[in-house]
Image 1 (cartoon, helix red, strand yellow):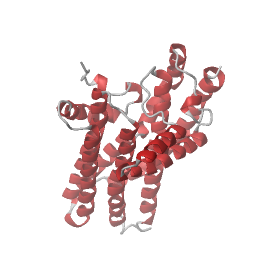
Image 2: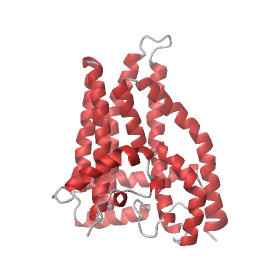
Image 3: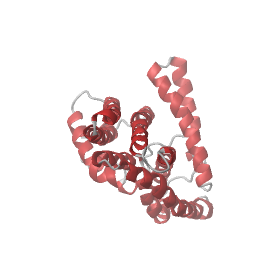
Length: 309
């Protein structure tokens, strides 16, 4: 019998974003439990989260002409989208049906939701600061910096999370996709005839994985570029890895997409977009000045001195 408990549907707690762990996932667990005995699939929940997120974008655009009530509605829908987005993975774990296709769709939907919401947020910054002495351009630039570096933050968190899972979990290796694995699956499916939607998923994912590895190589060159080149799992290695990386992994969880979506949603609900954008663009990037060196020290200690021995 499948384990439908909340604990069984989440990743190890040290890699979970705290906002997900205490807000999004408990609500998402209710959705997953309700969907479990039905014909609803995880992919359908992912698509639902996309439409809810697009609705958040529509409300945010509408608030420019219709007032703060629509901005608050957009924030509420954005958080709701994150909850539904969490439920797809939890349902997949209940059914033990996690797959690369699901991860590709999840990443695509995250990108679509942010593409729907971020432009009207930037438009809000422009409108809000038109009367500033220096005009709205500095705030627009800050918003763009927050959007671009925010995408980098979530990419790094996602990969460090997957490395942590590979090194500390004997079998639960969600997301350990090497470019060669993605290309091999793509070639096999292409020979059978790809559906349009699957072609779009692969088009984006085949570009995302190499770019993720290139970014990781610049941030932390001690980690092997491919999962297949990392040390094999053992209890001793897992214990060493946890000791060295538990603290930095917990810090990286604040850079995940769930935390970003929740923070942006609350800022929209409370009409404090400028404060959130400043925090995201300045404070989070300053935090990397301490986090990246700590990550490098931990990786160097494990992969160079111990883990590869």
